[in-house]
Length: 135
Image (tube, rainbow, N blue to C red; front, side, top):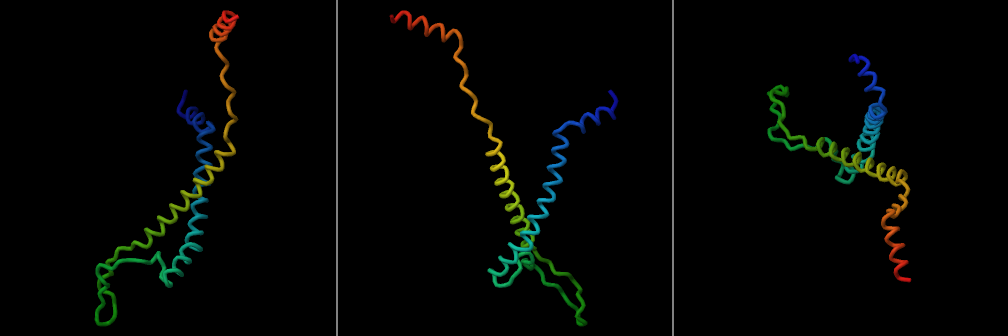
């Protein structure tokens, strides 16, 4: 079998196509949650923190240095932890919504309870012998 035909067989499998669809939907879903965090959650957190945008929060190690003309000579050195916190909130929300989705999906997809296994024939025969001996 040639490499091209093997590749066609690989792509034609359902699980590869399902994975591709999942990646595309996941990327789109990530954009939706990012828009939710950027547009609703973070402004609300900013409002609660007195108008400070959490995404812009940073710890300045060295302030920017200016010359006499007001031109920046050396850039500010800062640890920008606000962007990290915002990305962490994105991740937690995405993970939580996916958890809820999978929980609902598994509840709907739950297989019917399997019928109890039939009693083996030798056990049935032993019970019949026991019952006939009791009489």
